[in-house]
Image 1 (cartoon, one colour):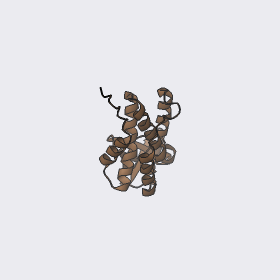
Image 2 (cartoon, helix red, strand yellow; image 1 turned 90 degrees about the horizontal axis):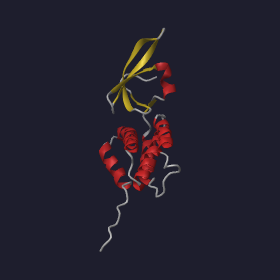
Image 3 (cartoon, one colour; image 1 turned 180 degrees about the horizontal axis):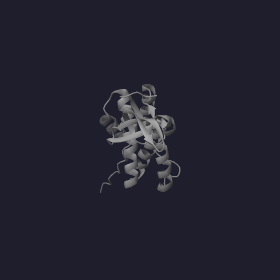
Length: 171
């Protein structure tokens, strides 16, 4: 059970803070709920305490896990696209599912794939939006746990995974 002011992660939304634990009437029954403020969007979520595990509400990842995920992102620069990268609709469903899971590494894998694809072709609007959402979720948690700024990490990853610059032909 979480306490007021605990920092938590809500899958697909990112880091939040338990702002309160309240008794609420939901349907015909009363129950306790967490009132969670999500930092990235200023959204307030109401989660029944008994459903917290089922929806994937969790504590922040360990520093060791965050360092491992950051190292994975730094070294995951692939020169070939992931299998099936041509079909955005299929990938979109899979990415949404993985970003909504409580697994930080799974979210980082989505980010790594989109960074790789972005090296090979210009990302569509929907792909960029998904990449930016994954960046916010993954780097937001890493920054919180390791006590570092998110901006420099984002710039570093974007530089590592920058599209190859086409060489100009000399006349």
